[in-house]
Image 1 (cartoon, rainbow, N blue to C red):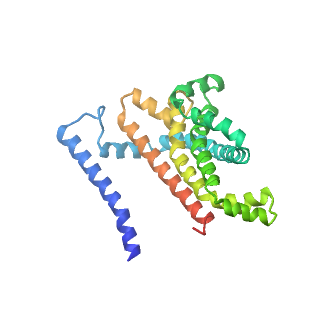
Image 2 (cartoon, rainbow, N blue to C red):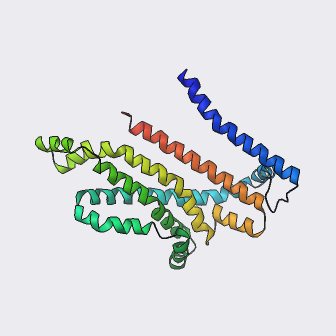
Length: 250
């Protein structure tokens, strides 16, 4: 019964997407809207098939930039969260700076990275790191803060060291928060890499989109968007799978 309920819950969004696509196709055909204004789902599908190899080649560049930046952001956020939790003075000094760093529009600072570091993958990786580290770091810090003080006092009464308290109590307790932050960052990382590519680059799905937009080939732009959405969803499911394997007690 529960399995059938889960299947039904998954069918609802699928049905909604199918209805939206059908309405989209009907409106474009009925109103005879030109493809350079808005392409139909059928045109997007045809373009996706015909341009598949080109899109995939560019997508590989974007995935590389996004994954490298994402892994760096996890390491950076993990270290920063530990430092902020261990030293309250440093937390009071750094926390406002971390928050301020997120108020700066990415699209405003990305051109600076291109000027400083060139048109290669490095500027895009930096953009991904800046975008992704914040939700991971803040979620992990909050996870450390929510640990019951009685548990910490219990560990201290048993003469546990700070390292033992961290490894056996704080880290396992904060893992749910950590993965919550990672999931949020996971939804941002492809987008951040694409934004960096919009402003200049040698390759990537963002560069492909800009070139297609300048040629008014909106079917190619929408085909690239479909690929980005699919990749983002797959990455979220991968993170969710890893979470279930690591936090097996949940």
